[in-house]
Image 1 (cartoon, one colour):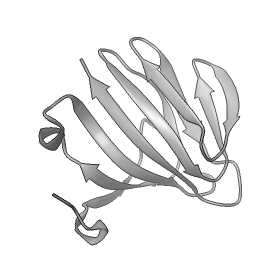
Image 2 (cartoon, rainbow, N blue to C red):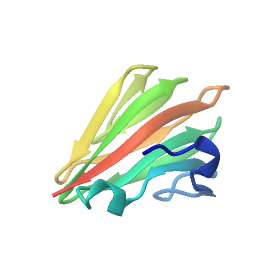
Image 3 (cartoon, rainbow, N blue to C red):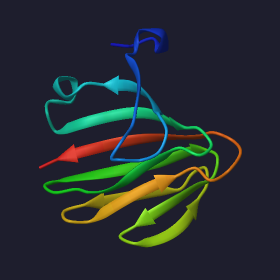
Image 4 (cartoon, rainbow, N blue to C red):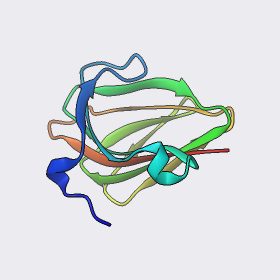
Amino acid sequence: MYQLSADCPREERQVGGGTGLVRMQVLARAEQMYHSARLFNHITLDPGCSIGYHAHEHETEFYYILSGEAVFNDNGKEVVLHAGDVTETGYGQSHGMENRSTAPVELIALIVTE
């Protein structure tokens, strides 16, 4: 099976109380992942946009940075991430991400469920 990029659903919305609109391309739906994951998206954060600080319970979210520079809030500690960096947040942990640079940040987000 394959899915052409043009056929992937796209949306723009505020995420977790963050600033601006986050652009998302849905790479797979939960039923395609046998409900072992609930989200697999390509995400773009334009300059000044953010994913608001939020917690995860009974699931783990991974971010894989494709391009750009993002400020990642890992349970209250900020760290700067670049292409190739990976994050993991789950089971009572919290995170958020902000693009404070002048170029877009692109990443893959995957939320794996219990």
